[in-house]
Length: 356
Image 1 (cartoon, helix red, strand yellow):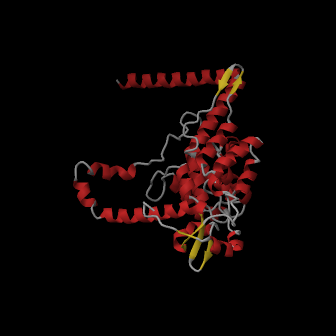
Image 2: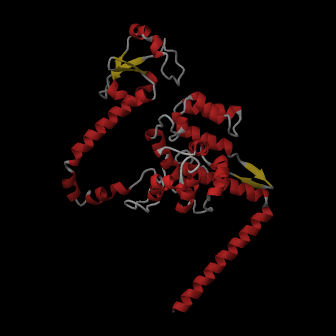
Image 3: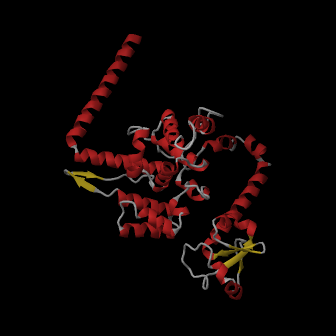
């Protein structure tokens, strides 16, 4: 209340009179409707919760469980922020003229708080032929679910294509190969001409080859958790955030995690520590190993903050594991790589000599 947030708590008598209806709403916390605390808010403030069937509606009001009240707070904050930004825009011209603030305001839209070093510059790019195996071995759960849905249904809705397409782009898949990859799946249920007319443009757009020719970054975990709730028939977003407990448990049961590890990940998701749940999943799937006297340890930098950081760390881990298991092969590859670098350097030196 000290922050001006006042919510009308539903009296026990009113709750008890509606207990049958309240018991039907989704209840991830497993709190019985008979003992739970509910708040009554105008339904317009609970649109997101209504879409996910996490509230009970009656006469223009939403009955919100206490555990879901944070969604209403976020909604009010966004509305307040929007009003404040609109008000601030009236002073933008004066602020921009200030030499201390002008450069900052000019460049603020170019800053991306989620952007990280997620490009796989230190390992090879990927091809469509590798994606099935990489989905099983190195993709985080969010991208696995999109890949499996694509392979099963031979299509993805817009935000699923966008989330997965940008991920694959950052993972090292070229534009031509992404066109080929999606075309191979989509044309199992449509003609090549239909795919070219309805979907090819958006793929080229992701790579900055159409429209404003903007380079788009892959989505980070914050966006997937906060802004990418899927609807019916959609598979984008964050599984730890958007799957119910039973669905998430069923998905985790098909991974390499044992029962205890699955329980720990589910516990973190239930506590709404979604990114920590993702990080724990990675740790359990990429354990420290000693192979032929060589320690193989995964780098956790960025894991739990960005899907491509997970993918990159997993690929490096499996690359190191393979090298430890096959030292002679790794040695031969390293020698070949060194020869290639030496040849490139020699060619550069010769070019400089000729130029002079």
